[in-house]
Length: 71
Image 1: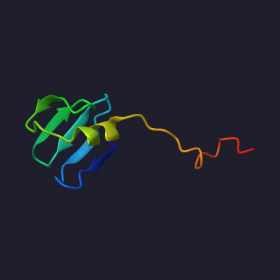
Image 2: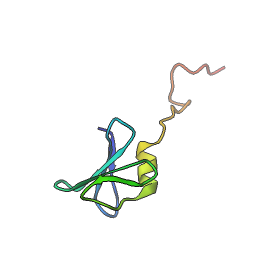
Image 3: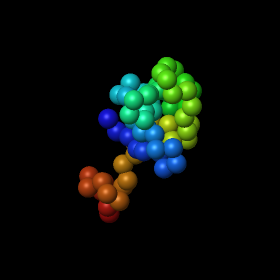
Image 4: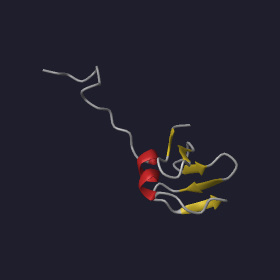
């Protein structure tokens, strides 16, 4: 899974592969939409901005993309 640890709460935010964000602290977890709305689980609150960042679209940086025509 792709994810990041929240710098203040220490919770792990991961993509679940189906467009949702799994927030966990090891034993407890919660499932949220990318806008931060709770779906299921023991954790009811999350950082909606971090959910959007982890679950949002991924863009290729043209400066690092070797297939980009740099004329």
